[in-house]
Each structure stands twice: as structure tokens, then as C-alpha cells.
Length: 235
Image (cartoon, rainbow, N blue to C red):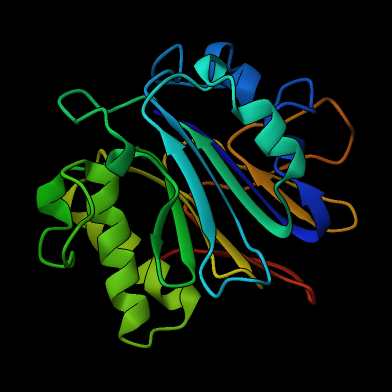
């Protein structure tokens, strides 16, 4: 299992997801409060953000524990954006521990993080040129293929998750996906929370103890844009 978080709203530093909150992803890497599978997330980490100087998002990924990277604290303070994504990884048994297996995965302007596990056979026919042999990369490849085919973001996610869940009933398919100007999330098989204050914050578990955190119901799709948030069940 893994932990991840994303932000869409006024410009913030990556540290607002990682180190500033009492229970940010740095702490969740070694002491998650709600993680059901695994006790630590020490098999890598990644951050992603958008900068006006580039069409594609910027990523920084390592296959080491997040607390072991001496360069990250300074980087996370200066990397700022209106759209952020970060993740810490607990690798599925048998999956490689390498940077290419670490979220966020990218395709063009899209960033994707997967919190869970899925049999690769469940998404094999949908995946196209996965970036790694790990299950999350195959799932990301399937979503990216639907987006390249022109599916709206919500439809791309629900079609892939619905089919993967049918092929692998034990799959856990929590997803975060963004293109920089909107944010989508799927709750499927594990916890997901959102907090609305000046923008939209979505995370595997609350990053702090502020009031206002709301659990996203299981098997639902969350779509967020500057116009608001919509949460709908996935059939």
C-alpha cells in the first residue's frame, strides 16, 4: 500500500503536502494513521508540480525512503504551484523498487498516483507501453491510453477502474489524476479524504487534525475544478 496527496488551488509549496502538516506524507511514510496494508512506506517517493515555463509537469522521484533524501526539504520549499501531487510508496510484494515504479507517473501533461494493488493481468489488455513492470505503472498506462484516445477524465478513470475491479475483485484502486487545471480521484478499496478551504486537498488520510476533513465514500469518483467539487458513485 502507499499514501498520496494532491492540491488544486492557490499557489502552495510542495512542503504543504510533505513536511509542513503534522501528519504530512513525511510522517505518513513511517507512521501512517489509517493504513490497512503495510506499516511503513519506505520503498520510494515522488513529487510532481506544474510550472508556467514548461508544458509538461516537473517530477522528482527516488527509490529510497523520503526521510533519507537530504535534498528534498529545500526542494519542497521552493517548488511551488497551483497544482501539486506527492506520494510515498510501499511496494506490492514482488514488484520492483525503482524510480520508474514510483508515483507520480506522467504522460504529457497528466500526472497519476495509485494507492493500492492490482493484478497486471486485470489491466493488460488496456495498458499500452507501461513505464515499469510494477502493477501501478500498468494501471497508469491503461488510464493514459484512455485519455490519449479522447475520453473525458472522469470516463477514463471509471472505465479502467470498473474493468480492473471486475477482473480482480480484490484490487485496491485509489487513484489521483491531474492535468494541472483539474483534479480527479477514485476511492476504491481504501481510505480517501478531502478538505475544501481556498482550494481542494485530497489525501489517503488527513494531513492534520483541522476540522473539515471529509471521507470520500468507497467506489466513488471525485472531480474537482476551480468551479467546485463533484462526487459520484461508480457503478
